[in-house]
Image: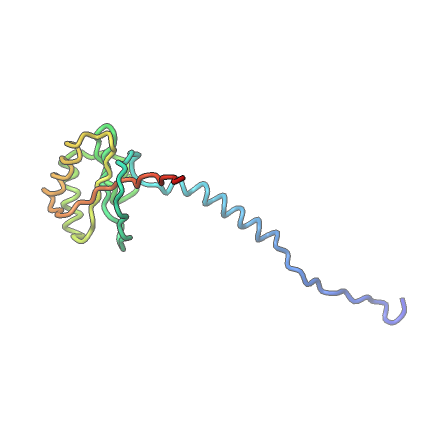
Length: 148
């Protein structure tokens, strides 16, 4: 050991990216697990039509779902209330209260394709009785056709 006895260590010029990859994989798993839970509403099979999609709204619209059995669900308010069916008088009462508080909100009906037409018209009549002038009906776009 001549000349001072110590060897000088060189600095490593590489960045260790393994911790960052671990964090990204954990976030990916979290998002994969929570994404299906964010789907709100009632499972209905919408009618398929070729209609133009609506532009995105600043506020979340009021969504009224009618399932295959004809039960009506009001998707507005706290998350725990969204999975509960409402009867006609409760629907009328809640929609009237929503309209009184926020008259600019849009109302959409998401009806299962197997529900008789009269079930959807009945919900539309309740909305009209609550003072809703315009009601949107949600549909599914048709599947893309493959051209040879």
